[in-house]
Length: 215
Image (cartoon, rainbow, N blue to C red; front, top):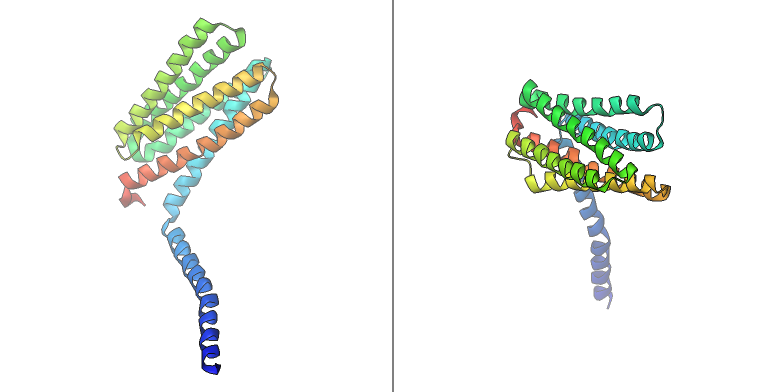
């Protein structure tokens, strides 16, 4: 019995220590993986997150200002358009001046068409709303196609779906704001922000895969 008791004690000790050992090893592995994301790739990810967070924030600011007819509408629009230039500029180190400017142009069109969609929704003009909404999604296709042509490492379906969902969530925000359903507007913004934060991950990962020597 004494011998059996010793065996049981040793077994229980192993069971109690082993998970802690496994967790410690898992933590070390996770730490090593984190360290592998070197400074350049981490900086690119951080920069992209800032840009796409700003995209969500200034889009919402413009929706609020345009629907209410605030005096800051044009100033907010200018800041929103600058964000599109900033995103284009962030791509220039990898794809060159011309490609960066092209992306910025397509993104500016994304914002300009959004203004027309918003105006049609605000006035209740359904034919114009459909017309500009179709143009908006076509522009999303153009942006996706351009990104894929620049970098085949990007997942076309993933990028396209990201833009489509972004447009849908902005439309939800516009509709909620027009109907003075401010809780729904806030919910749409929160979803849009969380959704757009997938974009920097997709873009950063694609760039790193295409240009491993730069990281």
